[in-house]
Picture 1 (cartoon, one colour):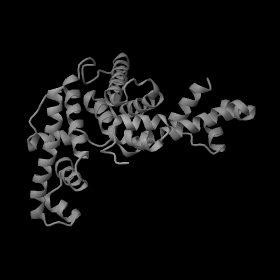
Picture 2 (cartoon, chains in turn yellow, purple):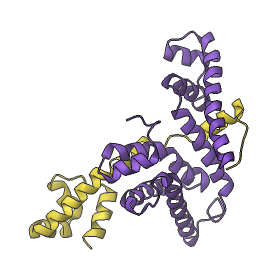
Picture 3 (cartoon, rainbow over the protein chains, first blue to last red):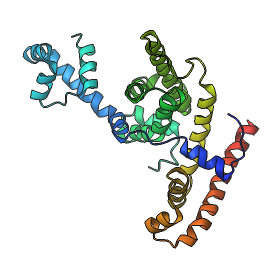
Picture 4 (spheres, rainbow over the protein chains, first blue to last red):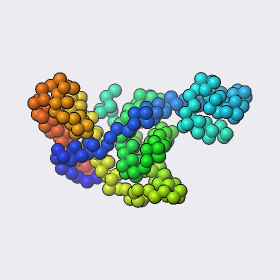
Length: 85
Length: 183
């Protein structure tokens, strides 16, 4: 990293160089541990309950919603991968 | 737990022990940085940047156990983010969209972002008052008057506060620079 003299202008420029990420992105990333735990629970349910698994295969998003889970795009993609749908 | 005083290594250890708050603090600490790497370093459009942002943190979370040095979280996360960006640029190029930045060498901009992060980190080590006043003035471009109204201070006091807080920030950064030069 270059060694710089921190003039007022330089500090201003560097502080402006990192604008905040969209709040929704940050919130989603911060909730990863909870989201992962919920994914694990869905996979466990799908493994233990053949009807639920069938419902997931037929219509993943609808089955998630009717079981009380959110069905956002990332979750759907991850579940398709983990359940090999 | 104070975000500014807790090291990356401590937060990583807490995350491994299942502390969700520690993870949220790591995300908060590096969200601007990861976002800037994608959007400024590699000039990716927002939808691609969002995927990279989420993937970078998801990979970091899943692979925390593979991190050899807990205090090396930042360069490790940066490396993962860069790889994801390079893959995304290549995909876009393969699909016929020219990336705005050469895939192999956005290094000048990435160096600047590293330095910007160091300044941000310096800011977090200042008092809450100084943090707020410098962020409002330098990052959000607020006027003395607006800051004065928000902080219930006379506008005439703001200039001297900024000057004093800037001095504290410089001292923080100079201290860090001295450590870099010694090592």
